[in-house]
Amino acid sequence: MNINMMNREQFESGLEEVGCRHQAEDIIEKMKDYVTEYATSSERFLIEIQTKMNQYKAVVYAMFSTMEMTGAQEGEKHVEFEACTLLCE
Image (tube, rainbow, N blue to C red; front, top):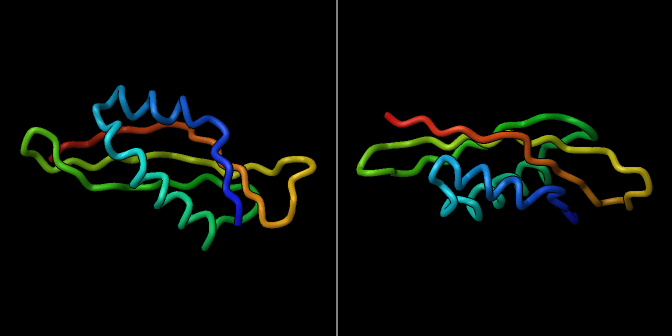
């Protein structure tokens, strides 16, 4: 399956704003796994990654949505990043 993130620069900028740019590839990997296994035609979903920041446990939440695109080929999914947030324990 071909998964196309429509706004990767916005995604990376959002992660940088919360200080978690280093988690980008892990989040993208989990997002692709979710889309491949579970995503339907058009839905919103949340990806969660646990990390450490300044010796504290932290959780990064990233919201995505799958999009139906006119002319998309079979086996092709388009994903848009919506927002991310960081919670520290």
